[in-house]
Length: 465
Ligand SMILES: Cc1cc2nc3c(=O)[nH]c(=O)nc-3n(C[C@H](O)[C@H](O)[C@H](O)COP(=O)(O)OP(=O)(O)OC[C@H]3O[C@@H](n4cnc5c(N)ncnc54)[C@H](O)[C@@H]3O)c2cc1C
Image (cartoon, rainbow, N blue to C red; front, top):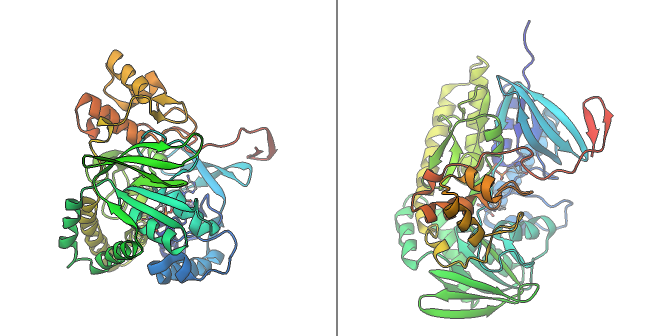
């Protein structure tokens, strides 16, 4: 008797689409699940309804790639089982297959898989500072999502702060959209940008784009400051401005919205629930699922691809998606032509090496917690301040993040630590004076994202919430 093969892909971004295309070519019909309304993932996010804006207007320099990927996905749809608006909130029974718990348009379901390919992408990495939970403070990604998906800005007068390529890109996108960009506050030192020189021969397009955004912002009179540390958001209820330190100076800027972030954090919770082994990645300062060159994890028949297995950008994600699909095809005992895999591994490796340099130009602010006052919220869901977390660490002699969660409730709220776990690990490692790796990894818990309570069952295996 032959077992039916049912691959399931979670995520319809570049990695998930790259994987689906390859599986379809091999004669398989994957189920593709994504919590978004439309396929495309973060970078190539599509508006809910077409609003008349051109690809150039929505995706700028990446317009051609976005259009190609969207068209490729639209062609794929008849050959796959695509389920948008479907949140995967749990993975269970992962012994060579298993099932996913999903919430799809208000209905809870189980979806069985024989092979699971996780292409769940990333989200912004944020750090706390006084006022970060105030209405009017957004992550860089959220500010960009408002532009791309809804065609609106999150404010009229904005300041952008943080570190990472998105900082300059989103500031530039807001400027082009007609918002008043008051300043770009880069938390990295100007000297860190010298790393970009060594990237020039390897990735001239990235450098040219970065220069273009920087020069255009400058020409428009936008202030760009380096080595900034925020002091506080100003305003009683919303954002009226930001006070920050640059060198020995304290400055204030008026604005009605602030967007900030410190690069991205891989969404690894489903890989964790699937029982994959993790390793610490120095560059991303994060625990990531272990994967071989093609994307196989330590769990048989579970694969990872794209930013969810380490931040490398959309081009790398697409290649990684196809690679993981090739691994899956190989594991089914089907031939796939090793040449393609070798080409993809080489191209993927080239992008990763470029990424290593890029990350050095946008360093993580390791000294962050030295200046943040104790009254600042560390975990906004459970309203645990930095002082409360410090007290728990010192009185309970905590040196591991799961203990910190258990004894202080940091990371125990609705977001399950998706917003604060990176900050909590950095904070704990700072108090203990060890590297973040030494404080361990916050274990994922289902549901990985907030879901409504279930009230009744609507049919076999289904429950309406
Ligand atoms: C907010 C944001 C904005 C970005 N903007 C840019 C940009 O402008 N330019 C740029 O070069 N890079 C940008 N990046 C980075 C870029 O998007 C990624 O490098 C690239 O999209 C990675 O592709 P991916 O397929 O791995 O993941 P993504 O494109 O992130 O796709 C992952 C998909 O998985 C889905 N998903 C995740 N978890 C679940 C779940 N539990 N259940 C169901 N579905 C799930 C998501 O809805 C998403 O569609 C951005 C990243 C973020 C987070």
